[in-house]
Image 1 (cartoon, rainbow, N blue to C red):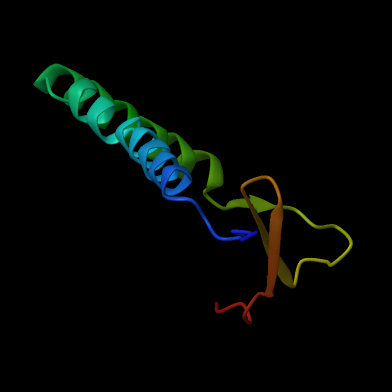
Image 2: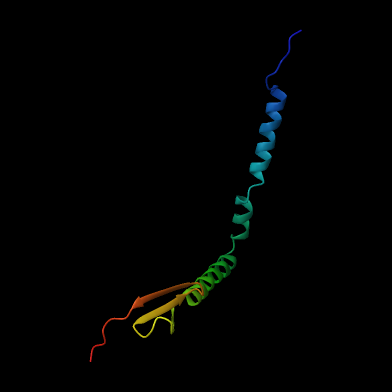
Length: 93
């Protein structure tokens, strides 16, 4: 008796067929169909621009008072998380 431990051609054909089905179910055609109209592209671009502006406003550094460091330091906080402090230069009169 001869025992075959290799991949059968039918199995290989089924694997390739399944891979083709998965590839055809890709998002590319769906995205092209969704963004085919100019109105949809305009709404998407406008929404994206608004999100970028809002993120810039929220993440912009704001001055923070730090009583512990004293008046020689200027501190700012960005995006509600990152606080940076730098030593103020000598006062010019």
